[in-house]
Structure formats: C-alpha cells, structure tokens
Length: 105
Image (tube, rainbow, N blue to C red; front, side):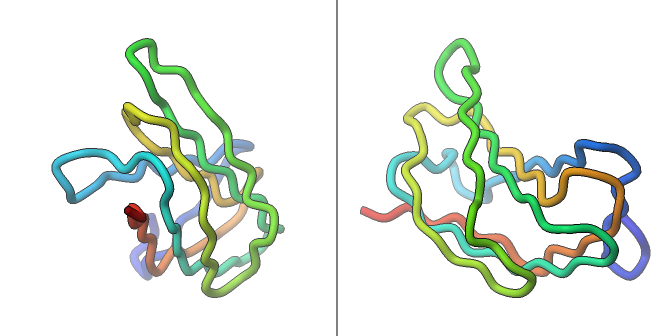
C-alpha cells in the first residue's frame, strides 16, 4: 500500500484478505457494497470464499462492476472461513475506499 492509500499490484494475482469485525464470518444471503478507483488497468474483480472444514474455495466473478460504488447480492456458502477479494487481474494501481458485507436475514 502506498502512502496515499492506493495499492500497487506488481503481479498477475493481487489479493486482499477481508477481515470481519464481527464474531463470525458472513454466510448465506449477503449484500456486498464497495467503492473502487483504478489507476492503470481494467477492472476484473473476483471474490474467493474458503468454506467448510476442508477449506473448499468457491469463486464469485463480479460481472457488472465499474469504477465507483458497486452494490450486489449473492449467497455465500455456510461455514465461511475467509473471503479474499481480487480487484484486478494484473499489474496496476487501485484504491478501495470502502468495502461492506452485510448479512440479510
């Protein structure tokens, strides 16, 4: 991360591990909202969700995504271990100004 808050990806697979401030990781139907700025590369966001006792990975390609605020719903697997966010798929600069996952009951 640069001093101005931007991140620099130097490889083909930049990854951000999302840490929950709740006592458990989100699961089931959720609403995800994030704000994203790009410097020098196209947007290709993917969420990787590790779940279950053996750590299976489920991939969610985020199709309708653009610079600025993005909001969508999806269903996460039960027993979520961690969620990883890959905003771009190559070298470049990006800035995530907010990222929220809210469980929908």
